[in-house]
Length: 200
Ligand code: GTP
Ligand code: MG
Image (cartoon, rainbow, N blue to C red; front, top):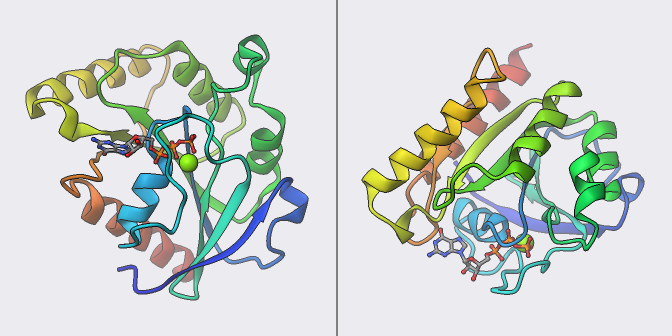
């Protein structure tokens, strides 16, 4: 359960992120995929993370303190910078440094637009995560924009594409910030992994 959510800091670089070693859960995905909206849904907040219909709204690493015990992080989207080739070759600098160096990162939630066929930029991003052994889960967003059948088809199609290169599939969720679908499952997943951290 998320009881309290407080904005802590926006950082332009991973080295300026909060110095605490609280466990961290971060949200990333293509620009405009719905990261900030999902964070507001999970935290029951109308406007904790800034939302925009224009891509590229979130440009810094934003930390929020949850229940005084862990950090939730809103990251800038990938795929908006005007250097697509560079992005294809790896993460953009700010994001990659954060992902590779932030040792308290427990899980990176990668958001995928549930309306689309598998996008190369997302597949490449996930491939990079795999190469660097970064733990991640998938969230298929904006499920309210089409029929549940269509969403399921697209999700299965994406997972099928992943399974061509991956032996095990990552945990995955379907979500909508309009219907609140996915909220309980995602929060439960975080709670469970947080709990197992305390036990280990
Ligand atoms: P950047 O910070 O620019 O990378 O974008 P973001 O990924 O944080 O996306 P944001 O949450 O700002 O949402 C982008 C647009 O999609 C906004 O107009 C949202 O209202 C809309 N949106 C986000 N999630 C959903 C959803 O689940 N359903 C619907 N219908 N619209 C959504
Ligand atoms: Mg955002």
